[in-house]
Length: 295
Length: 277
Image 1 (cartoon, one colour):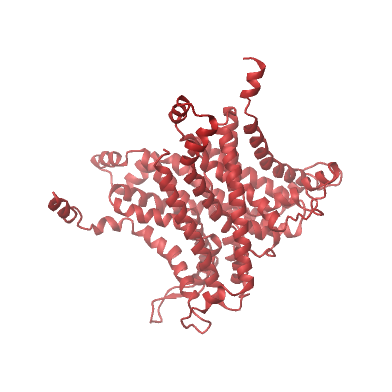
Image 2: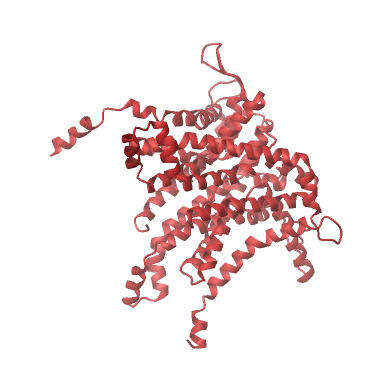
């Protein structure tokens, strides 16, 4: 038996060049517009201004305060909105799936989530300026009706808190979109079996539903993290580039070498790519764990 | 059912979350609409909309963005449909690497993508160690820039487009369709355009509309490549005007809603998240 299974591949696969030729336009496109630009940045990040090989850019990356602060701020915003948006999105998804809300609300919320998770960039920034800006609708409402002065209380739309509030607008809807199918995947039989064995609602959730859902929740939060970490347009439209998150810093570097070292700019870009790659790897690993139980 | 059990069955917390979520959605929209209607002192009116639509720059940039969206969609379909079809039919071993590639745009944010694209395509591309130029710099001509930005948008839209198309092909039996078409004497071009495309049209439509939603308001690529598209225009008037930006933001929201609404109608419930943030 071992003999046959060993010799099988040799019989089965004379590599068919002609078939691979059919997908070559796609690979050519990927090389030209994804691989080549990335390779250029990787290569540039290892070159000093004279074009010689160096590790100095990466050493500088970890010792330049503006860059460290930019990464810190970006990470903070991404983590906060991923966890906040993740929890709130999960609760909403729970409410419209197993939470006992009328069916019509479910489709309304899902439609709205689809729109909101795609509604970003400049228009989103303007919408929040009209809402929570200094003369925004909610700001004035709180001031006039409830005598609460948001801005005197330390809130500022053009800051960490403000940007996080804006990012939440597309973060939690994305969580809703991902979690609804997962919650739908919880089998009725599991609940019934638990109830037959005398489990309480709480026991069912802590012992059965949550362990099944947990990889999916965590994976989705990682996705939300990446979603916020790579965001540029919203923050740029809001502050015009004064809030120093990583994407804004990279933008400034593209417009005119503000770091006075192109290689350092490339290294900063690579740092982002590495963080995004790690989070995507984590996501797909957790996705694999989820699929064992759901769907 | 008596009153007490009904109270106990009432999903209180579900309603709380729902109402809070609904407010988070609706209040910013309401505030934007309200702001956009108050251009004239003490009057509610559509003056900001009239002003915004009077501006010829609005129409020019908006038209350009729509054309770029159409170009992106057409080019993506031409690139991705035959690829996904061929992989399903003949080279299943290419599936993993292809899926990996279509996920790459998630790893490379738009700002990084445009960084690389500018650096590569703003100087002539030659054959190494010779003086022969294969390609003139794309960013120096208008047409070249449009081609470059379309390619960039194709990359941004690729995860959504590929997924839509591939899901569409999973639900129809393309192998049988292909064999049937072949036995009737159809060539490859006929099979893809006359048999495969019509069978995955709802998947194509949802991929196309999602691409449209990504491209029309896109700012990052457009502003760094210096394309006068709608996104940078909106940003620019945001710096100078007070009411028109709110009006246009609201219009953009309605457009996104329309595009996503059609997807929902066509594909049922599965909304999708995209990434032009």
